[in-house]
Structures are given as C-alpha cells and as structure tokens.
Image (cartoon, rainbow, N blue to C red; front, side):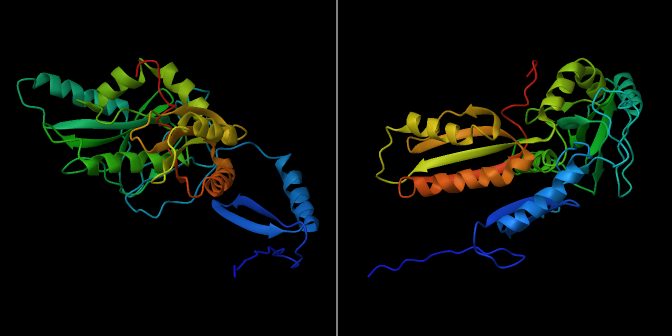
Length: 328
C-alpha cells in the first residue's frame, strides 16, 4: 500500500486554506516570508504599492553572513552618489574598529619612498580584491589573504574604491585557503553593493600604484561595469547526471535550464563541462531581489529531473562571469 502525503498551506493571518500564496519581502535589512490568502495578499499589496510609488529605488541589502571573517560592506544612508557621478569623489568610506582611511595621496608618498630605496628588497605588497563605488563603509576587522594576513583597507580614486590588504613579498599566495578567503570577501560584499572582482592574485607594489595604474586608467570601464551590476549578483547552477543516466542530453538540458531562468535572469554564461557526468553548469546574472524566484525555479527543476540529474544552486556571489572589463 502506498502512502500519500498532502501538504496544505494556510494563511498565516486568518488560517484560510483557499488560494494561499507565499510572499517574500525585506524590511530593515531582514528577509521575511509569509503565507497569505487572497484577501490578505491584496491588503499587503495595496499597502506596499502605496509606499513603493513614493520611494526611491535602492540597492537591495542582505543580512550579514554568519562567517565572522567576512566583511560587512554597506552604503551610508545619507550618501547616494553613484560611482563617478556628482559627489562621488568626496563621498568617502570609513573603516570601523580603528582602521584608518587609505587615501591615494598617502599611497603615492609610500610609493615614492619605495622608489628612493629601490636597492632594497620589497617586503610588502598590496593585494587587490575588487573595485567598488567610493560611497561605501566596510565594518569590522576582516583579515585578507596570505600566510600572515592583514586587515582589509581601501584605496580611493575619483569616485572608485579598491578593496585591498597588505601581503608579504615574496610570499606564497594561491593556496586553497587564499582562494576561499578571496571569494568569501567578494561574495559577501556583492550582496550589499556592486563589486567588480579582479583576477585572483592581483598584487601591486604600493597603494599609490593601485590608484595610478589601476583605478585611474580604467576609471570609465569600472564605472560602466559597476552601473551594470547595481542591485545584481551571480547565481551558479550546476547539475550532475545520476549514475546510469543518459548523458547525451546535455545540450537539451542546458536549454531547458536557460528557458526556465529566462524570465528572471539578466544574462547567462554557459560553462564548459568539467566532467563527463556534468549535465548543466550555467552562471546567471540576477537582480538580488529575485533570489526567492531563483530558488523556486531550481526546486521545480529538481523535481522534474529527480532520479536523473542532481541540481545544486550556489549564490548569491560576486559576478565573476560578468564583471569583466575590456582590460581583463
């Protein structure tokens, strides 16, 4: 005898079980979900629409990640300057917990001193993680990459901010732990503010060179990339064929995933299969507010592919597949 389990959803307000829908929304930096019947769905929609019509569009904010090593990056409420726009140049960032602001002028002076002592071995380098708008705050004493990691800092230049930390030179960079730290830092920032990731292992000899050789010459490229990433993050969807499943349908399954995500994704990049049993591997650029919809699509696909493809959803994360500038 088969056992059939039926799930019934009721309105969280009145208990009605007819025409119940799940609503997801964010308030004061926190995400909420509620099941509502048609009556209370209309009531909520009416209230939200009334305020939304008077509100300004802002970058979606997420709660702080549980991993204490990851930074909490946000924009001050009183500052709304876009990168490169009016006021962005003076809209600085504050580093809490006693970390001082790393102005480009200070970096230039350090670079000149290094030039004077060119006969001496360079002992410190500047690791650059990514480029952000200048109107940000980075809170906490988050440590960067390297065998003796230093705290995160920022180099500013004309409405842009480079997220940096000091590393020992020469030093061994590129360990799996360094890669996890690099990605963890960028991913946690990307759910709060736009960030253009730089290639893993990008190191400059001084803070002044970050401003003079990176942010200055590529200013317009970074501004354009940041505008495209405003309010968006990358989601990576991977599927692996179950043992014994037919693997000749990879192109068909890839198209099915792209079609399922078409309504909510801005762009997509199909990655080459790394294994013969890899079914799908696609990066999608999605508005961060659409995360519940991404989860719904993947849940539906997982049910449709049950017993044939195991599906994994990774994200939100930094837009590694999309935030490439012309010089990358």
